[in-house]
Image (cartoon, rainbow, N blue to C red; front, top):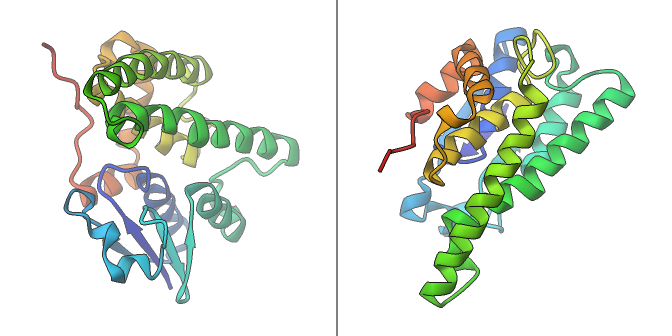
Length: 218
């Protein structure tokens, strides 16, 4: 039995979508356990017992926990290759993993500096500068992703939904929180609208109770 501990709206949305896609193809269900990050549930003794980092996601496989989104998604793809969460051809898969690693270790961490500047500075002026600088940097990273997916039909790797699609959707959604109008990235927005309509993605969105529209015009 697979059990996913996720935070609504967090990066755990990516394996959440993957598990819904796996369910649709194989019929294998999973247990979804929400972790309310805003209430600090990721820091409770019970959660730290399965993930000492106090982060989401955590995938529990037959009672054994696995953390870190790259490791989790790699495991799911290897366990269920018939789902097509990543390309199967060796070189294409390596290139896809290179993109995915960049999304995780660069784009994701840039947004962390925007959303949680208190982790990196005590001074309020320094925090404000961190937010300003990294929001601008985050936009350039979204533009790079738009270049990758601008002509995607219908999804990142073709006809099947992938972990890249779920992460790209998450990033544009976070972009609104960083003050980036999704309408200023029209190809990216149109692509995300297609991704959001996929049944596996729509199921994860519904369970997490999240909205795509996070940008508020001043």
